[in-house]
Length: 230
Length: 288
Ligand SMILES: Nc1ncnc2c1ncn2[C@@H]1O[C@H](COP(=O)(O)OP(=O)(O)OP(=O)(O)O)[C@@H](O)[C@H]1O
Ligand SMILES: [Mg+2]
Image 1 (cartoon, each protein chain N blue to C red):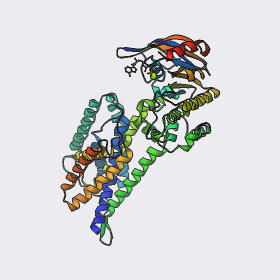
Image 2: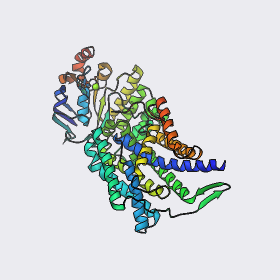
Image 3: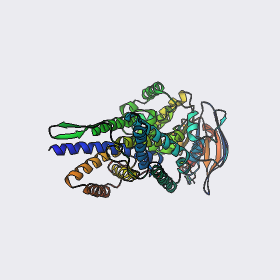
Image 4: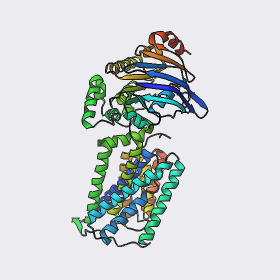
């Protein structure tokens, strides 16, 4: 589904990603674990096209997307939930969610909305409220629903548990499981290894722009938990 | 009492005109992050296009208004897509380019139509009166047309996919584009919408106010003022502020005398901005 080859990302002189290769197979959930500044967001943002890669290849669904604009990449079927949620604060919950469904027509949007509401009834309860007025956990759910509303094949989740209370971590985990059941491929980043490891099939541990260890969740668990306390 | 009501009607009429100008101005700022110094130019040129179509070519006035809107939308589209887009990342360059384009437009008008105000009367005359209240039919028609245009803009912005995309882009451009919103298409669209509205307003308003090459200056000043008062980038704020500005201008002109209107207005805006620097309905911080 997604193949990244020797990816390099720099900001001025700072090397954020220094040669990362990884694969995300169809239907798999792959976790990127790493402390602050490891380069997780830079990698995710390079995939969706928000930051330029200096070098490397990004293949999505058999297609080289490295030179496409980010909106073109999204339209190919990549959903994106950014770090820190970044909901459209003054727009309603429903407008936020449907903002991710740009490729759908009105009827398809209505279907997509109904499907999301069936999974997350809170969206319907708050549909007219401005997203900026919601709690952090609610906003995260809105951001994920927004990433899903267009029916993506691949979902990029950048630190979906960031700053959330345990109740909400559980809610978000339920949401991610639901996507997995729908067959959606997921690439997610997390500093908090414990809850994230429960969701993923395999993972990579990142530090200073490089992958230090890779393997199934079982294989990297110990190292990942150690990394969390770095 | 009657003059109070009649003045209120004039204020509301002015408010609708300022709303159309300010909505376009605020959309451009909110979505593109550009202060469009050419805004007044599209208004004047819209007036001249309507004058040319109506008076010189003899086309019906509504057709002339439509031509003004469409031609200014097209010009705005071309300007954004081929000139502004090249420098969109550089704030100072966008100032220079929009200001420069305004000068080009004003000079073109001067060269084609000369410096003198052309005779461009509103095709409908007569005055509606109820008791002691007088309100010219021309103003009534312009008021109705402006209200219809405002309703259209609100419908577009709040009820359509394009509008949702424009609002998302004005809140967080990178995230909006990462969700699939096409900036390459929506930037020129938003710009064309704004300049089309400015051109249409010019076509409607210049016959009852004034048509001359330089009237764009004050249009820019009032649009800017309205949008700052309402909060840069805010649609509702621009609308509220436009009606406040229109009513103050009308009442100040009648009760304080002509030139004091503008003075009152600037004083009020100054006070509001000292108390609320982000404007009436503006956001605290904007993306840089
Ligand atoms: N816009 C930017 N400009 C300059 N440097 C940046 C920028 N974004 C990230 N960096 C730097 O790149 C490196 C990797 O950052 P990145 O945000 O990718 O890490 P991360 O793993 O996502 O960290 P976190 O867990 O804090 O989100 C860091 O050293 C960071 O300071
Ligand atoms: Mg990050």
